[in-house]
Length: 336
Image 1 (tube, one colour):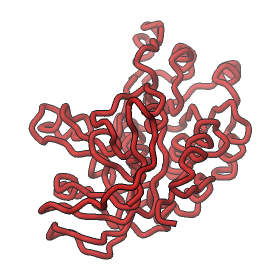
Image 2 (cartoon, rainbow, N blue to C red):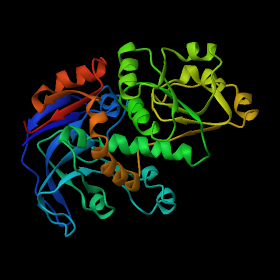
Image 3 (cartoon, rainbow, N blue to C red):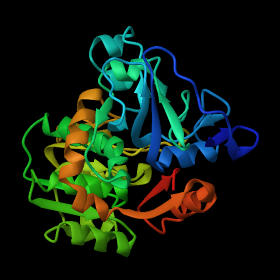
Image 4 (tube, rainbow, N blue to C red):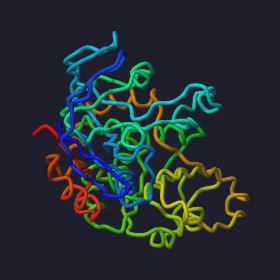
C-alpha cells in the first residue's frame, strides 16, 4: 500500500509498504478520506515533535472496515476514527479527562495515521467506542474529529453559564465550524478575520453574523461579548481580547501555537471583571460520538468548508494549498 510517512531527517516521503496485518482486537480500514490539520503542518515544519520517526501522518480520518478482529466491529461499516489512545490509569484519565491523558498516543504522531490507503485501528480506541459509524460522504465524514473538538470547545464554555452573544476570532475551518454550531444556540455572533474571503464565507454560512477584519476595529466599536472563542493564535492581542469580554464573560483559547511565544496580559482585566480564561484541547470519546451523529446533519454547511481534495500522490500540492490559505479544509483521498 502507499503511505505518507514523516521522517525527522527527510520530511514527508510517499512510500510503498506492506499492508499491515491485524492483531487480536484490531480493525483494518480502507481509508476514504483524511483531512489536513494545522498540527500536521506544524509537524513537518519541526514545530511539533513526533514520538515515532517514520510515522504515517493524518488523524482526521474516515474509511470502510475491510477486516476485523474485534467482536464489536462489523466489516463493511463506514466509520470515523477517534484520534487517540489513552492509558486509563493516570490522574486525568481517572477523572474522565481522557483527552488530557499523561500517556496519550495519537494517530499521526505515535501511531500510524490516515494518510495511507489502509490504516489499523488499535484495540484500545475501539474499546472506548472510538470507531464510530458515520453516515456522510467521505470528504465530510473525515471532519468528525475537528467537529468533535469544536463541540468540546463550545460545550465547555456553555457549561460555565448562560450567554447572549459570542465572538469568534479566526474564520478558518475551525472558526467556521464554531459558527455553524454556535448559531444553533446563540443568534448574536461576531467573527473576526483579516482575510475578506473567509469573512464572506462566514456570511454565506450565517447571514446575520457581524464581520470585522481586526480586533482593534471591533474594540473601537466598544463591543462586549459573553463568550469569546480564540480560533487563531492571538498571543499579541490578549489584552484587547480581555477588553472585549463582558464581566463574568468566558474566553476559550481553542487555537494552539508555538511554545516559545508568550502573551503579556494585564491581570486586573481578568480580576476586576471576573473573567474566566480557559483552553480546550482535542476532544473526548463522548464528544466524538456526538460529532459523528452531527456531521451528517450538517453536511450541507460542512460542504462549504471543504474547498480542496487531492489524491495521495499530490500531497505536496495539498500541504502547500493548506499552508498558503488558498482554501479552507484540504482533504486527501488516498484511494482515488
